[in-house]
Length: 96
Image (cartoon, rainbow, N blue to C red; front, side, top):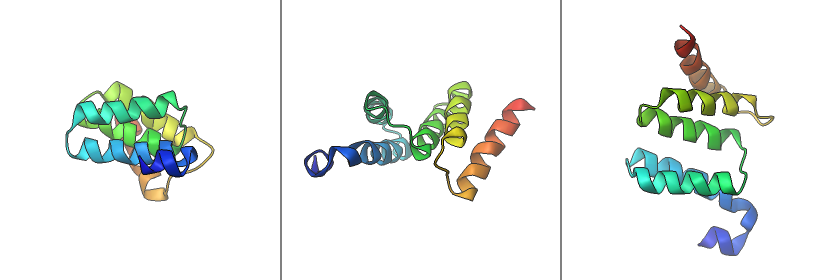
């Protein structure tokens, strides 16, 4: 609610972090709702795609996780090196 009132520009970032939190808590319906809202707002940050990939890994949907990690690695903004390496390692394992 504060993100909506403060600045609509930070709403997707807030929702992305919220979705990651819901994923960690295994609150799948809430996580998917937050991810869906980010998609509706056309949020395209590498963090969003990385978190969405983690959601799909937790849900054992490795095809969708790979797509998300690929998007996270291909955005113009970059993830920190450790997150990039983790996403790339997942993709490399999928290719083997």
